[in-house]
Image (tube, rainbow, N blue to C red):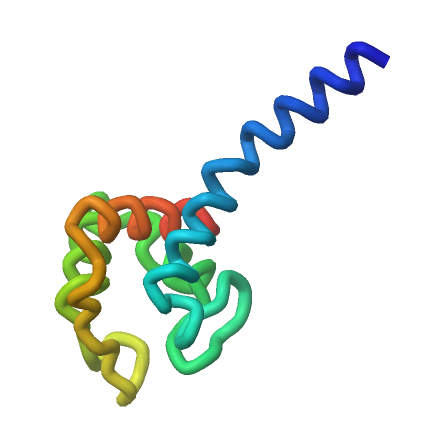
Length: 101
């Protein structure tokens, strides 16, 4: 019984950062155009993570795109700038997106 409780607690602790970052993505309106596992208007976060899995500069590049927007990488629909996202939050979101692979 005690072991099951410890395992459950560890499982929740491991999931907490992922849920917190999903909550951050939702609070910054990322989920209006993206989803974790499927394309919406923009690519899924898992597809982004897979595309940039071997790029050591991906986190910084994605954080910049989150704040400034971008176009042409995933098709003709541009990603608008997100002025409401701070640099710290953009870095946190970029790291989380890259971890979704």
